[in-house]
Length: 235
Image 1 (cartoon, rainbow, N blue to C red):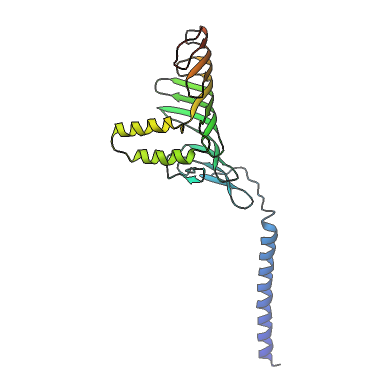
Image 2 (cartoon, rainbow, N blue to C red; image 1 turned 60 degrees about the vertical axis):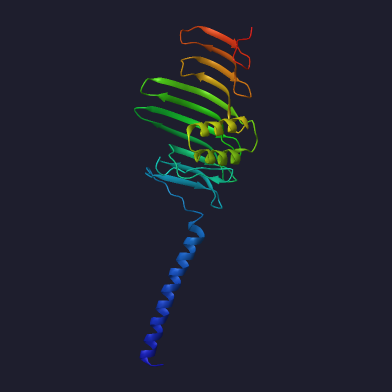
């Protein structure tokens, strides 16, 4: 072997060794880096964080108001819309199942933690709502019921059709039919302070009619009221 051939061989072997070393380091990083990719830091500034399952499915979004997730329910992905900053939770079938959101400005303020019924919208909410302009507030625990099971898809499409109607009267008629078909949530219970400055327990029937009120009114008077389905007092 000539000196020139020897130098060529050494050069090729050196390149081969270097490339092999790089590949080995890369494989070690891929093999162990993913499972041991843990970092500690004192401060993190982000606009949105997506938490996913081991297979990459979305489980939670922590976001500002601009980048907030639009939501998905009963497999229906909502179009872009305004949403508050906060946390959105997702279940194992990919639906939004709850949220913790908040905001506040010179006109209104609020913070709510909501729990959704499976394949439907919220049924429980711990809420604080305020009209900051007139200093009117409501806060407490709110419960809803959905008279018809698994009806969100129907409600969503009916509501989209309603938006396409021309004229206030036509939209009001369509909305009344949606309500008559038991597609809307019914207010069932509130415990807390109302916008009327009444503090107590307020219970409604399956149709949303007030039936029992146990509260202290704005003047400090204790009251216990029982009402029929038409709103008249029952002795």
